[in-house]
Image (cartoon, rainbow, N blue to C red):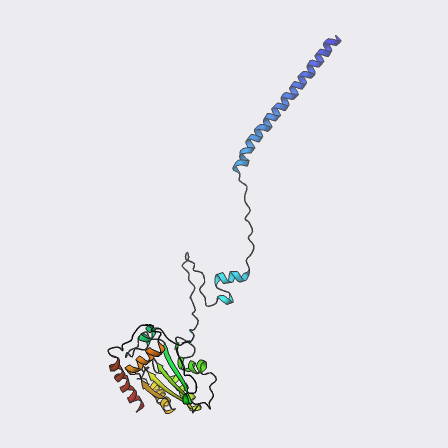
Length: 274
């Protein structure tokens, strides 16, 4: 009986063990099912990427991009093509240009002695400065202006003769594309009155607004101050071409109406100065 009971108890224990193992298997299966169910969630759910923090750019660079920095004022900001927004450009004033010789195109266009100077919005001035007795080499060159703070006539004394000695005798010869305006004529008259040993001879290709009463009075005052005012003849255009134009191998023949236009302007100048 003891063996039977012991065998029975052993079987009972084994049965319990089997049941226990079966329960564990069921639990494992359920866990496996849970794992299988949860796994697709992990696959379908993509981890959200946190945006990388870019280092903040200096404020100066941002201002430059937007055209708001001190150094970007007056410059064009980047065009926003999507919005169609464009920042206006503020152009700086042009500077006085100086040199020894000008281009042939500048000469032929700017110096042509036509009656109506359409498109000619600058003044070209060719100069020669001689000392008394020819003791030194003549000073020669040309200047031009365009929307500059000072007109070329005034700029000549600021840049070419900035330290002029009033006791020195100088002969200054100008060949200009047009006669001076009212303000320049008045300034030149003042300079000549203050420097008695400075003699100025001005050859003009055209007369600037010669019908205006203010211009007439300004030119009269300039001549009264000692300036010799002349109109350029065909031979004067040839002289300027040979001396102040970077012509290389090019030749120049005065325009067909050059003499006719000279006679026209000379008549007007005579009427002004009489």
